[in-house]
Length: 218
Image: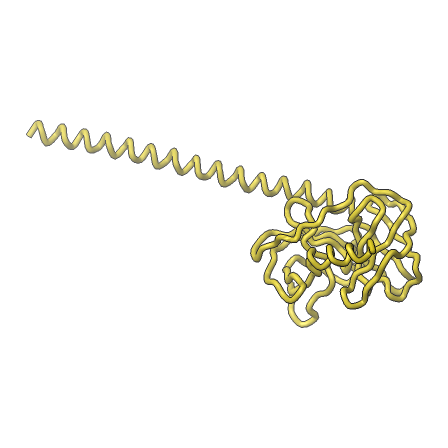
C-alpha cells in the first residue's frame, strides 16, 4: 500500500515537472513570435521611410501626374505612360518638398519605362533586386491622386509575363512608383491596376528594369 502511495506521489511530481516545462516552452515560443513580429514591424517602418525619401511626384503637365523614384543619385525612373505627353523635361517634387526639373535620358513605350537625369542630387536612391517570391511581403510607395507620398503593404500574389502581380493598394497617380521588399530593394515598378477586380495590381519586374537601364547606358 505504501509503495503505491509513493508511486502516486512520484507520478504527480513528474506531471508537475512536465507541466512546468510545457508552460516554459509556451512562453518562450510566445516571446520569440512577438519578437519576430516586432522585428518585421520595425523593419517595415524603416523601409517605408527609405522609400519615401527616394520617391518623387512627377508633374508632367496640367492634366496628369504620377510617381517615380531615384535609382541613382541623379537618375529618376518612372513609367513611360506617365510622361508620354510631356516634352523632354519634366518637373518633379520630392518628399522634402523640393521642386526640381529632370531631362529625358531614355523612354520606351513597349517596356513602359522612362529614365530622367536631374541636377538635384539625392543620395537616398534604391537598389534593384531581381529575386522575388510568391507570398513575400511588399511595400509600395507612390502618389495616389490626392494622397501624395503614401505607403501601402501587401504580398506578391503571382508572376505574370514580365510582370509581378501584387495586392498592396494603389490608385491613379501610383504609376511609376516603387514596389519593394521589406529591405528597401526594388522588385518592381508599379504600372497598372485591374479596373474590374480589387487589389489586383501589376508591376514591371526588376529584371526588365535592369535591362532597360543597360540600354539607357548605350
